[in-house]
Amino acid sequence: MSDRSLLALNLAEARAGLTRKAFSARELAIAYNDAVEGTKPLNAYITPTPERALAMADAADQRLARGEALPLDGIPIAVKDLFCTKGILTTAGSHILDGFLPPYESTVTDKLWRAGAVMLGKANLDEFAMGSSNTTSWYGPVENPWRRPGDNRPLVPGGSSGGSAAAVAARAALAAIGTDTGGSIRQPASFCGIVGLKPTYGRCSRWGVVAYASSLDHPGPMGRTVRDVAMMLGAMAGHDRRDSTSAPVEVRDFEAALTGDIKGLRVGIPREYRVDGMPGEIEALWLQGVDWLRAAGGEPVEISLPMTKYALPTYYIIAPAEASSNLARYDGVRFGLRVEGDSLDEMYELTRAAGFGAEVRRRVLIGTYVLSAGYYDAYYLKAQRVRSLIARDFATAFERVDCILTPTAPSAAFAIGENSDDPIAMYLNDVFTVPANLAGVPAISVPAGLSSDGLPLGLQITGRAFDEETVLRVAEVLESAAQFRHLPSFVAEGRG
Amino acid sequence: MALDKAAVAHIASLARIRLAEAELEPLAGELSHILDWVEQLNEVNTTGVPPMASTAAARLPMREDEVSDGGRRDDILGNAPRPARGFFTVPKVVE
Image (cartoon, rainbow over all chains, first blue to last red; front, top):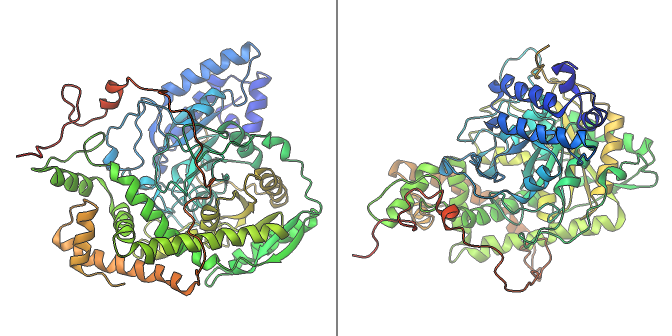
């Protein structure tokens, strides 16, 4: 097969091709290594690992030849550079982790390698996963492979898993892993026209993932189709005794959940998601989604999630508070950057001033403030109480409905540099995605249509805790109805 | 809540981030703006509502207190900016 046709295969198709030996894992890895190289202008990868990819592909080929294929044998993926990979530079997109070579492998990547997946490299991200545009990375912004027709301005891929999303969309990875603290898998998936799933909190281990906000961080898969994401999740999920918040819940066959049958399933439509300033075309796409699910046998039910408008301000207290604590470890003593000073405190202060970018500093300062004596109750404790109410909103809704349909984001991708003057304008990108992080429930973004200026728009399905199966099943029905076949203006084509 | 320059300097010293004098004023504006915005939570009646720290199980799982790992000094020091004789090093803290 030509490189071009290899790169056009989705994960399920590639797995079938590998199994029937239509091509080898090595051929697939070579095509993708070339694609990673060919899409360099997007800056989707911080550290490509082409030699590692070939070695892993060769091992996969040996297993395939023996008829002992693993579930993801030979599948080339991108890894958000927030997952620690043993002996391979891990940066979190930050200057402060300069030169950090983890002496251990994260649980999720370890599981993926044990399932036969092949590592193409470490994908770019917002610094410490703080951002919605992938413009805060020390390694420079990522470009979205999509552009508005007739407009050459580079667009953001969304964030923080922007490199992962751009790589999958540009066919420089067959699938990817990301993390989602307030929308960081789903919003870039929506902006880049791919599928992204934030699983239930506790479904995928956080061990070995550089921490941003521990009670909100969720590792999850990104891919071209709902089936691809279901296959990835099956390999990533499972209890891990090294993460005390990892859930001892059985991992079922997520692919088997894709029956296409949603007859009688109750789909909640929350009225609070009609927010001011949302473009009419996003509301229209949402209504189209309701019609698609109704046509497939689903029963739309109007519901109320009254705390929706308070989710973002709640997030912007809790996440910075946890971040200010988690990021205290970057002090110039044990790893990464060190700027010498005359005293210990001076060394800490100079190291952290040089090592953290503007958005990270802002969040660490906000977090420090809301946790400080005299303000803890007014801000942090208050936000934790509102978080309870947000979780209750979902619990109440899920007594009446089986899943919830909403838009993923209130806009399509915007130009690099837009929304950068006002932090709150940037934060508003996550208005529809943040509630699921606070409540810990699973949610997926599926590409559903194009905006009037030719950019992808996603719809989001949210489900009950540990019911990824319903989320995936409904998402696949939505995917089949939407028939999203558009490609970005910049995709890797391979050699011949 | 409007933060002034002195408040920002205090928070920055708690967070151990050195800020230049010229950075204080703009940061005071940005942080005040964010705090004003999050204060809309005061509209919500949370009387009697318990704070939620995590959606994971409220009780952490217990296990036997057994050594399961260790003996990795060189691995751990491998990323240290200035290790010496098997130790991390810092500027002198005792006169």
